[in-house]
Image (cartoon, rainbow, N blue to C red; front, side, top):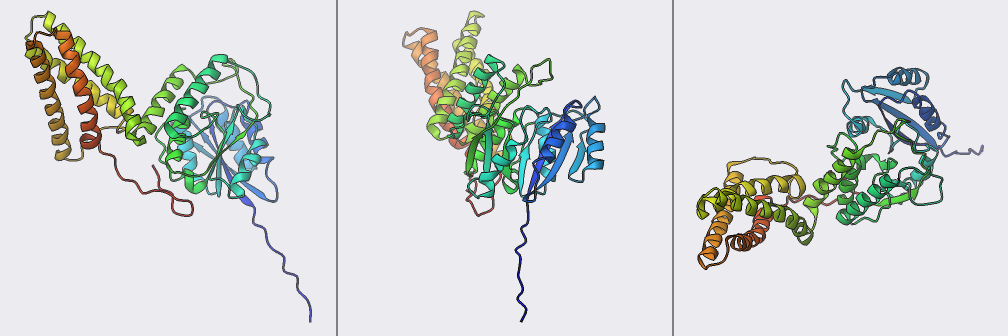
Length: 384
């Protein structure tokens, strides 16, 4: 009887690499070729180039690559929308089991992708981030204040997400496909970085970090990120993390919001008094204007990302809470002034009382936390 030898067929791992591209004609082809160079019998590649309406020859270079390499697909935006928008487009099209981000400017070395992929293949991680500030890999020495800004943003992000990353703003991020496709990306530009970190932290997936090499560019060489992007990142850290923080940390943030609005309340009150308005009128007008500022700061930074007037009851609840706090503020101010205490001190005390009740009313009545299903490894990931 003939003996038959059954050979096990090994199916290669498929990695989808999304390359956002804007005016990178000088480096795009070299970048793609170096990404293709990491493929072997155990690793298959899918490369999706998302051209963000480049004004140079980037599209022609990308289409030429796609005609020669079956692994390459090109998608083009009709107008420039930003890196986050390009990644959102690319992530929706990926088919590999794992997904990586690769900038077209070659500041990051594609050979590092195989190392970053290893914990995912071995089922140790669901997300792996590449750090420019850990490990012994070479990195170009450039801007000191960029380094300081990055460290500050990473520290603040870690405080809100309870992670211990060394480089939150890194480009190199590798995901299981089901993880990244479960995340609804909203940021169009570089705010994608703090947004995605905040959202994967909430998913409670396994996150690893590994050192990578970094060959940064100067602005003369084409670097695009600027001061406004840093400010946007700061906003995004609050915007996407604060709504999910425990109540004590939320209150600390509200102290900043409420304190700012309390100072506005006081300044408006004293200003109106100087124009000979009555104490009652000044207190009421100052409260209404500062309450409006408080509401919009709460939406932007703390409780909810934007107002959703979904029902009449929501409007009624907000009006009710605001009215009660307003009555408390005006009554307390008038009562304390009638006791012979100066107007500025009376208003300050009333504002402090209102600060505490404002936080409680907004957190539990106006902006109650929605219940979300928790995600566990082995179950369906719940998108933020």
